[in-house]
Amino acid sequence: KKSIPNKYFGEGLTIIGEYIVQLTWKEDVAFVFDKNTFARKGSFPYPYEGWGLARHKENGLLTTDGTNILRFWEKNPPIPAKDGAKDTKEKDGWWKEAFSKPLQMPDGRPVKTLL
Image 1 (cartoon, helix red, strand yellow):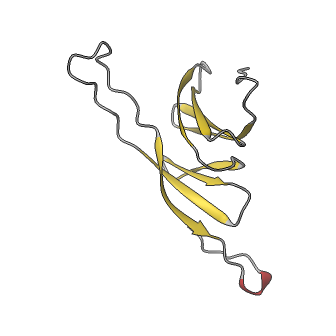
Image 2: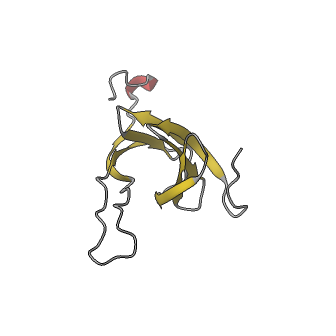
């Protein structure tokens, strides 16, 4: 079990690779945890209401904020350590928004070919 601070309302959650990613509802942040130890590994900006979250392909994320928009996120490359920095390990770049797609429902029927 892993709790997040009380000021956050945890929403969508998925496992991707060695991580667990969790959105927050209105706090504009997504948390990243180690999937085996639940240790917090980092976070990245999520400037929408966090509702649903799923893995997309090998390293991508698919999110929804409760509207008709699906957002696709791609994994950033690792951030190299700065010369002379105290921490010489490269840091994970986490995810960034790649593109979004509105769900269009002509005649009231969901679109079958979305991805």
